[in-house]
Length: 89
Image (cartoon, rainbow, N blue to C red; front, side):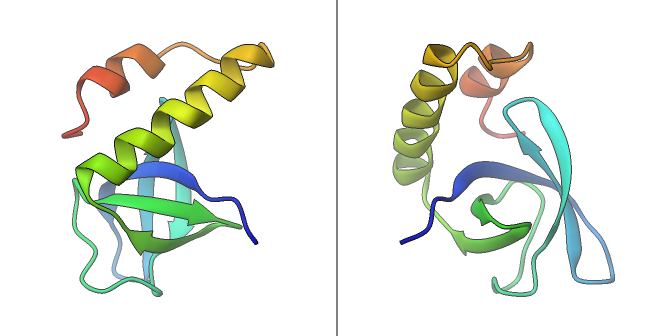
């Protein structure tokens, strides 16, 4: 079993990578495992790679679980509330 983090694609690069938003932070991830990545796509990221596109409902459910866990651990940074309310980013 693996854990994947919900992210939103912000920009797709020609080299098979993309900039994603992960809880208000930008990360560079490999998107070669998903079909036709586009800005705005909701994805699950594991070990530096987007492993699946997901629909809005699945994405929000995963996002809320991760948010609760990060809050409990005191690891939640600024910007998360904006992303939670604006998932079209």
